[in-house]
Amino acid sequence: MATNGNDDAAGQAQLEAILDVEQRLVGRILREDPGAVEFAARHLRADAVSFQKPLDRVMATIFAEHDAGRTVKATTIAARTIDSDEEIPVGICEYLRSVAEASPTTISPYDTAKQMRADQRAWRSLQSSLPRPGSIELVRGDAADLQPIDWIWPGWLAAGKLHVLAGQVSAGKTSVAISFAATISVGGCFPDGAVAPLGDTIVWSGEDDFHDSILPRLLANGGNPARLHYVAGRRDEYGNLQPFDPAKDMDELVTAAKTLSNLKLVIIDPVVSAVSGDSNKGAEVRRGLQPMVNLGVRRKAAILGISHLTKGTTERDPIERVTGSLAFAAAPRIVLYAARPSEPGQSRRLVRTKSNIGPDCGGFEYDLHQVALDGDRGISGQGVKWGEQLAGDARALLAELEPKTERDDPSALERAKTWLAELLGTGSPAVPFIQAMARKAGHSWSTVQRAKNALGVEAVKLGLTVGWAWRMPKASRPGEDGPH
Image 1 (cartoon, rainbow, N blue to C red):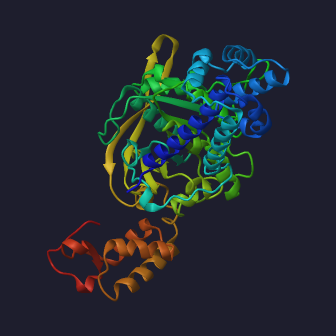
Image 2: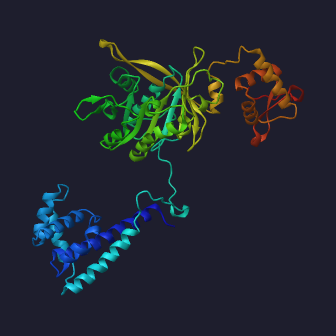
């Protein structure tokens, strides 16, 4: 089966074949075959501008010498070519001499013109089969390679992919992101024990100062500051440092990122800054995020954008709560959610609410704490202490932590009780089915659980395949128990 590698090899072979023909044509001229210069001057001018470097410049010099009435010689052409283009390699003299010596010799202008005309036809045929700018390329499935996801943190951060970390104010979104950078900077372990690849992080923040907030957070999380690179600004044409604008300066950031051979993570805070148009319009958001996607692909780094949440959306699907257009959650391959507790004593949670390339559930508990860095100057940084790994649906994990807006609404509980009684009146459905139906009916899972307790609904285990199910009290079986 053909592969992308084979396709690349075939393309390279075609370019080498074109170069071989060009070298023969140039070689006949430099070898001073009879009539070679005259043939080139009459018939090759249009084609020669498309020759590969440096032969395109060599041909331009040959035409200039011919038009000026001077004799075309390899050494003279090499010298004048160097003078005309600073990008010409220093070894051009040796190269042109080898080209001339490798070319066949003809004994008459007729033979020269015949051979050069044949080479010209071959060159045009090869050129016509090269891909053209703007052409659409179709790749057949059996000619493509299967490629695994290049994970930086398996299931959570993928190289070359766009991610969004959304969350409430004071949930510690930026601190969590910087803790990722700290882990990568020392090749440490992520919350689930996965070992991070050692590498660099680029960070830009429009909300936090680098010196008194971001850098202290990296140090508080045990990071190596030599592997954290802050985007301080962009130099204008006068050398003055101007503020970095993610919506306009991403191409310059791509160029700057080339200096980091081991780049693993890029953090943009907030991600909405990358959109110059209306952040509530999906098309403009996707267009604005594309340069970030391109940066990740070119540098094989995970791109992590930080986002806020829309107010008053506690009971909605987490994906719908990201500020701005739905495209802010649709364009990224992975969306993470940082939530702070509504009651004191609870830990915060990092939950995976969406993934197109892996599991879209589960999470981790974490707490924020201050770490003293320089007691004499009163400098401290916010550290992240990771806790228990969590399993379960993202919406359910968040509902257990966030304010229960329905808790003080008796009508919401009564509606949930009526709905649940009707659902269980026909049998004992599995818990995942009940959760799915509750979402469709508009009931939060926390309210459904309160309705379950109020009705005395029992949880029963129905074999290894079905798992836990709920049933009304009238169908209860003594001695059975399950999770509530």
